[in-house]
Length: 581
Image (cartoon, rainbow, N blue to C red; front, side, top):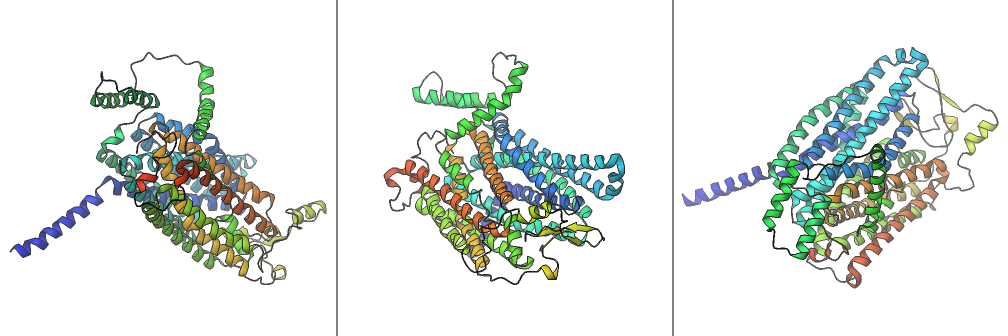
């Protein structure tokens, strides 16, 4: 009987542990993030295709949308972060969740109406009503993106720190799991919605995304509430003044207030939502100036952070064409790679990205957090050297003697029409002869659609080395990204997490915007090699900034042997570190 009871009790224990994990705050946070990210990736993929379909297979609306999104986060990142800091965690999370999903739902409904009645809208008020619909779609989609930014700041930069508690190893594991979810949804979500739009129609795609966001919003709202209930410390949020006050009390070691009473005071202040001070009347001019002051203070606070150089190093990695975005994909098409090959390469990049998250957790345990960033940076840059070499290999179209706008400008000055390709509907569509792909009916097609214009097959050595370097570098890239993310989580004061991470997002978008401007200035495939070399240079500068940060933080211990005690080298040696995890 004792032998039978032993295995039975063991099974009950394992079952109880499994149930406990699936009902824990950590798993519920993962589940909510997976639902949120899945919806985000579907929408970000679909909205670009929708805008191309609406504007006659032109990239104009997509480009305008991208510029509006980047500019909005660049200007409003600090203000969004400040709003996150000044309000309770649950209010921020629920508000941003509802605004984001409601905006996507509304945008989907408007797009469905446009797809159904586009011909009628085009004739009303000389087409101005349709133009207003385009502006409305881009505006609402931008609001959804800003709300998504607020959600990412509060959940990935604040809630996750509180749920992990004092355990930094748990925080590292949670960060890595969040990134793995991101990698999987980056591939699977666009594939899913793409199939729906291919076998159905763009209107069906709009309806599916709107329905998904409605359902997902309700589930995510419930999950947030459950996580909040299971983690009582989420209700405790110190303001900047309270944090400074507590710091002074700890330094002076005043005995007139017990620690328990101080904690209770914080809870009461957070619950009541106001301090017992006389409210001051704020003038109209002060209210107008407040966002500008917040913007200035946010950037000044970001500059004064001990992890400023690490954050700048991460931002510089966004100034690159060495990723699987529309630019690199378009270049690959001009070099003869098919869509199926590109999809396989994207899958491989997702796998190496997941490997990077695994490498991060292992390296952190062995070498500590700061050294993990150094090793990851060296690994990424070493792989990107292959990309630099590919520029000079056979098959590379590098030719700096070709003017970026030679083809278009020559035709404009000669008053010759641009070449056209007949669309299935019979109306001609402009095909720019830059060698880059164009979008025809929602699918990417090489610009040389005419057999007489088709170039001879080029060697694949150059493009193969390029993508080998890009894919291999994802291991170091995502490990480095996780390193800087955790450094910001551990070393930024709780009262400033929102505004500092908001400014970090702004910096990321600024460098990303610069990389698009760089492509606009040199759009020809012949100049792509130059863009690759510039991208590798910016990555090198980013890792040099991180090296300087590590040198200031660890000093003579920088090149010491890896220690099995990661806590000793994670952030305790950072100058000016005052936060607690």
